[in-house]
Amino acid sequence: MSIRVMLVDDQVLLRTGFRMVLAAQPDMDVVAEAGDGAEAIENLRSTAVDVVLMDVRMPRLDGVEATRRICAEPNAPKVLILTTFDLDEYAFSGLKAGASGFMLKDVPPAELLSAIRSVHSGDAVVAPSTTRRLLDRFSPMLPSSVNEPQNKELERLTEREREVMMLVAQGLSNGEIAARLVLSEATVKTHVGRILTKLGLRDRVQVVVLAYETGLVRAGGGQAF
Image 1 (cartoon, helix red, strand yellow):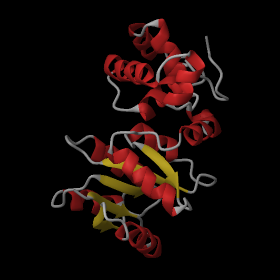
Image 2 (cartoon, one colour; image 1 turned 135 degrees about the horizontal axis):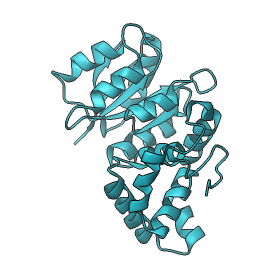
Image 3 (cartoon, helix red, strand yellow; image 1 turned 90 degrees about the vertical axis):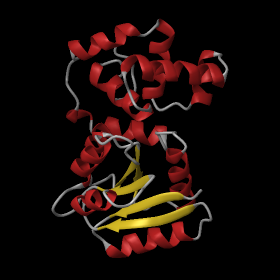
Image 4 (cartoon, helix red, strand yellow; image 1 turned 180 degrees about the vertical axis):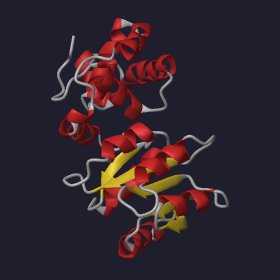
């Protein structure tokens, strides 16, 4: 079954380019397009979508608020935020709003396709190292000190789970974490699953965000305590 994609961007030429790339894939189908967040939400009422490629800066309703509203719905599609990175300070907010990851608008076609497939299959973080760089760049948006109520959530984790969470937040893949901790990838995957369950998180992106917000990891990738 094809991955049903909706393109959301106020620039028609960009949507056209993305559509041409996706249309050439046997496992992808562009089922809807929208020029802003409000139109995207309207489209979802009548069209089944698996993955939304969401621009950030758009008229009427921006991508961050649209992502928040979409992800709040039951059985919501996955959302990938599209950002220019150097100019867009809203990407972190998009992740907090529920996006499964983010990509640069000038991403090579092969990476775009891989990202869509990865998110559709349940892998949230498209490029962990890039996610880390974004969070480091916009660290002033994060609390300057540890948030005690949120930090208490981490008490549910075992010492090993906290260690794995810290490495996820630093941008390491499961394979890299396995090598660092001398574990199998299957064991790391199990730890990540338990972290998600215990903390009530949806995916690895939310693990990264919470790790920074609680102070488990500070900007620059260091362990806070």
